[in-house]
Amino acid sequence: MFLELDHVCVQYPGSSQGVRAAVEQVSLALAPGQIGVLIGPSGCGKTSLLRAVAGLERPTAGRIALGGETLSDAQAGIHQPPEARRIGMVFQDYALFPHLSIADNVGFGLHRLPRAQRQQRVQEMLDLVGLAATAKRLPHQLSGGQQQRIALARALAPAPRLLLLDEPFSSLDVDLRGRLAQEVRAILKQTGTTALFVTHDQLEAFALGDVIGVMQHGQLDQWDSAYQLYHRPATRFVADFIGHGVFTPAQIIAGPGGTVVRTPLGDLADVDECPLPGAYPGGACEVLLRADDIVHDDDAPVKAQIRAKAFRGSEFLYTLQLASGEQVLAHVPSHHDHQLGEWIGIRPQVDHVVTFPRQAA
Image (tube, rainbow, N blue to C red; front, side, top):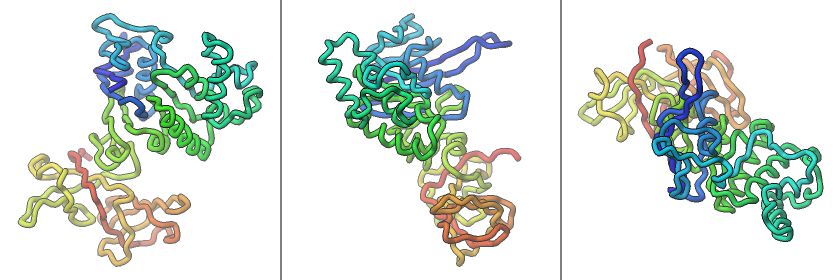
């Protein structure tokens, strides 16, 4: 692995307890050229972890290594300063120099190169981000998306060993963020750059990351692909945080035909990865039902009442209530425009049955 974090902790001075743990025992790794993303609610520690990798925060425990070289080791007393790490950073506010041309902004970190080499590298970076024609302009003459691509070009110009990006698209509108995320991923893959992002936007994380980490209360709950996070969440928090879904009371039952998970929508039989019935008291559990696990089928024996709906262009997100009181979510093609209060038929179509211990009411 290229970037390695081993049980990293970061603490800040607190108010009453003396210290406050921002990051607790986080371990993760990135291979060369891999893009990682940290996601989680505000205050979960993702930016503190990024700052620790950059050298802007000193870990109170654990070790950070890059390319086999130790950057920080709390036990050994090692902490390389940020300027010695050869790590690039891109921030939310772009941090471009308003009085310098775009070319001078991109070449700002290349002052040690001979003039001809510096100009060549700047041209390469501007070509890479598709903004060669803007070289003589000033930052305020560019759009927000263009400025962010210039910030990326400036960070890549010195050929950093690792690129860190902290909420780089949060000030842009939703459509532009989606497009720019795909463009930035393509640029990083083209240059073979190893990168670690911080974002609060799930779709952005899915578009960018080869591997995604979900954090809460300073801890890393799961470090995995987007597919695994969505379909095989390791914790209830990850299951709840990623995607749309609900937890429905269920029971794991071992019968003559095999093990099934009995739910208000019927029995779910694809339980190869589920715990055995004895894993929960009496087999009682809660099953995660994603919105795409519920299929609208007028011929289905189970009926549900539409309690809320949200139009999303190609589909509606329906909130449905069963006669027994449980609620589920369903993605339904938008030409099925049913009214609030209407009863429709639904059936489960669950490829990955995920269960958790039943929580007290």
